[in-house]
Image: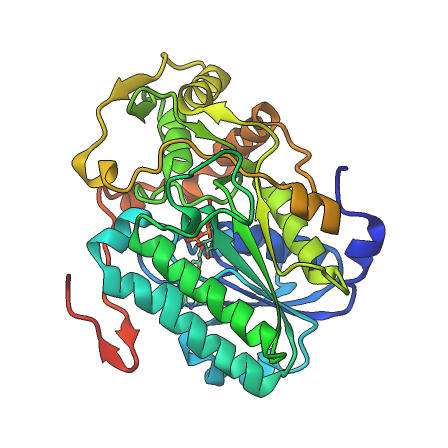
Length: 359
Ligand SMILES: NC(=O)c1ccc[n+]([C@@H]2O[C@H](COP(=O)([O-])OP(=O)(O)OC[C@H]3O[C@@H](n4cnc5c(N)ncnc54)[C@H](O)[C@@H]3O)[C@@H](O)[C@H]2O)c1
């Protein structure tokens, strides 16, 4: 399978859709794709410091995508955007596991409390509305077996995994009560155009790509034998489109993995070779990362393949080439000197109207 069938794409023509987190990496790719399909797209994003919001991400829409800068926790302020939506794609969130360990309350505010408040407003404004939520493989923690299917125990090893699971459970609970029509995608590592390359704490793929573009040897933590199954962002977007368009889904939660399982050393070598830089170097895990490392991971995406007809179409070598080409072209919007910070600045975010004290 390549792109979702024309019938899936055409389901979105003229339909009103909301994309939360739509200035970020995956959300912007999804918003652009929906706009190209003829949907009436509104993006809501709070542009929270430390996450991947970048207005350039949706520049290609040329004004076809409406942007609202707002926190989804304050969804009452954009209630009219929720009413009448065919599908809400809910991608707002904080990705960084390290940020979540440094500021657990900040992560809870962004990934759990804001989600609960947003869903309450969805239930009020659009009872039964379809909401497709971007969850994560991180809810499964260090795998007990590979590949990881949807029956794997939930055993997160960091606050991000705990709070993302809380939000996953909110979607499933409201759905079982018939208040929303929730669908959850547990994404593996996603890569592609529009990643927030200036953030150092958003995972290894952004760091590998940034170092390649800066022509610095890629640093791999550990011995490089850890397995991952990166999924190209266009394939992830296809999974969202299919989950949002399916009328009678049998399941509510699906794992979304990449087409191939690779060792971190292989991933680093492929990226290095694509730009012609020196071989990767191997470093011991920094203390902060050792504690939350999950070892090897790969997804079993059988369920989404059999139920929704999704499977990844882009091989890693091809996806990484497209990613590097995008950033070589658009570099100034992603690797500006003024954006570059060796540490991500984390600001407090309000929880239930109060500011969260520094961790
Ligand atoms: N990138 C990955 O590999 C990956 C893997 C698994 C799951 N996910 C999930 O996919 C979603 C999107 O990830 P991404 O990589 O595009 O991250 P990103 O940081 O690029 O985008 C997330 C966006 O959400 C916005 N946001 C955060 N909290 C918000 C709030 N309360 N209200 C409004 N906007 C808010 C941020 O400003 C940002 O623009 C996240 O929920 C993430 O947990 C991503």
